[in-house]
Length: 184
Ligand SMILES: CC(C)(COP(=O)(O)OP(=O)(O)OC[C@H]1O[C@@H](n2cnc3c(N)ncnc32)[C@H](O)[C@@H]1OP(=O)(O)O)[C@@H](O)C(=O)NCCC(=O)NCCS
Image (cartoon, helix red, strand yellow):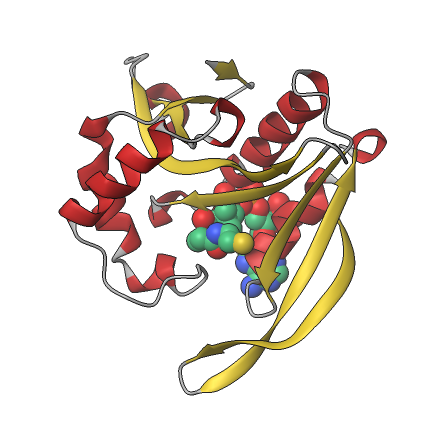
């Protein structure tokens, strides 16, 4: 498990999958993700099985926060699953990886959990996987994500013009990158 101050990253379990199905079918969440078709539990199970066959560095993490960090009055120290994050396409020769992230619990957006998850994952990538660079792609109409990535130190590196067709029109995709000395 990888621990930050308030979040922890752990391996996805089969029992998490119904939550993934719920989140990935939520229009407010999928609006910002590269998803076109509805998601079903059987498909998620296939995705989960496939992740187990990928190299460990590319296997996704479930993002948890403590119940007491969600409600200050709560005495429970139990962990609550709020989202998913991970690296894909690790390029070992150039020591670079692409990062992906979703906080599925939209009621918790804007509380800093996304930024902390990016920081924890990137720090692990730099300090344990010996990456030199973490990159990501984000749609131009996702200012919340862009801001979260900027807070972690990511810089805008490029723009793939009209690379996403959604809601009957094209959107640009921004390319952002973070070098190991730039993590904040
Ligand atoms: C993107 C996402 C991971 C961010 O996580 P989060 O926990 O909401 O982010 P944080 O609270 O750490 O930071 C969000 C920042 O964006 C800011 N923000 C929110 N809406 C904004 C807007 N419309 N314009 C500009 N900034 C905005 C917040 O104020 C906050 O910045 P601040 O701390 O300086 O005030 C999360 O919202 C999410 O999963 N969204 C759906 C899926 C998604 O977009 N995934 C990323 C795909 S690239």
